[in-house]
Length: 261
Ligand SMILES: [Zn+2]
Ligand SMILES: [Zn+2]
Picture (cartoon, rainbow, N blue to C red):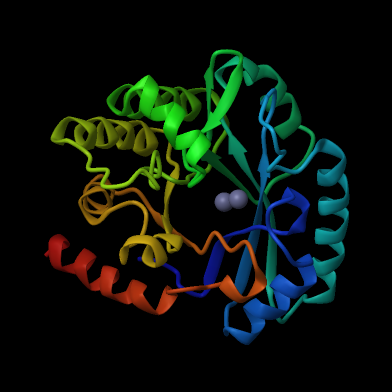
């Protein structure tokens, strides 16, 4: 059910907050015994944030070129996919689609990081105090609702193939607990994911933060019930994190079989 020989979510230095060359990620994947990795580099449009944490359009040109040559270099040893993690910006839908149309992507991941508030953007998945304090002022419930509403819109409007970070909103907010209503909103979003024939990412970076993947098991269970394919991703921002915690995923697979029977 989950292919644990493919890491479908890997970053590189091109996004300005990850380290390591593409080649180093490829070598790490081979060392881990993986068959395939997909570079899923951050794209954002129209974001006003103090630090660019995404690849520019020029970075993407280099990323694509380097990626194509690695595909050849590792042909027969490691399959390499070139993808993009598209951060949604409700105000820049056309610009985003125009950019996506420029290339053939092996994977288009949809995520949502930046909330617009008072002329600037706040990162909803960041651990920085400045983000968390301001988001708290806006209201935790309001931020969560907006996150899902806009993510739903992103699934509708963008040509995504995988939904990333289903429940990553405010993941660093101390003691955050989703209410039943929040969980329901997330489950409703999965209906659209199923309808769009997208996959759902099982992001293993969650194991480090909370000893379970993103999204949480009740949401994964709902995705499975809806027949949504699951795609494993480490969200590696350094080469040694490629394929991290994938050995824990068969546990999920068993769980999956359990509920199917
Ligand atoms: Zn990142
Ligand atoms: Zn990512």
